[in-house]
Image (cartoon, rainbow, N blue to C red; front, side):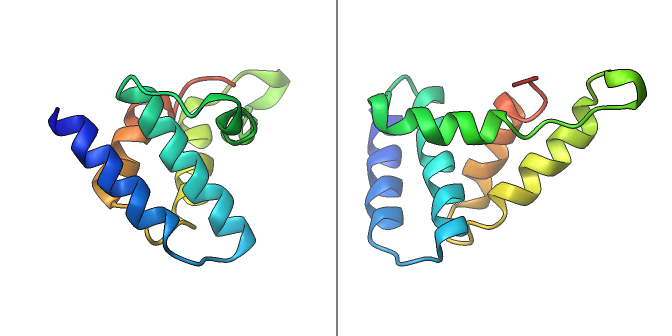
Length: 101
């Protein structure tokens, strides 16, 4: 119940704020991935946001996946959404930040 209330409040606040296009994408990613973490889904509307987030990958030499650099790339991207709660962004990154997309 508490998670549902928090996610609903977060969605309402984020949806009411006007932001530039790139930051808007980052905010949509935060909303969609937070919803995914809490068991709710944004449906087809979140597919492109999730795809954009998981397309951010970093590799070492010889095409070995680098989780730390991937985390940094995704953290910088989500940081563009200044309206997002830092704790929520941290939770999203903890869950999905180092996963190969």
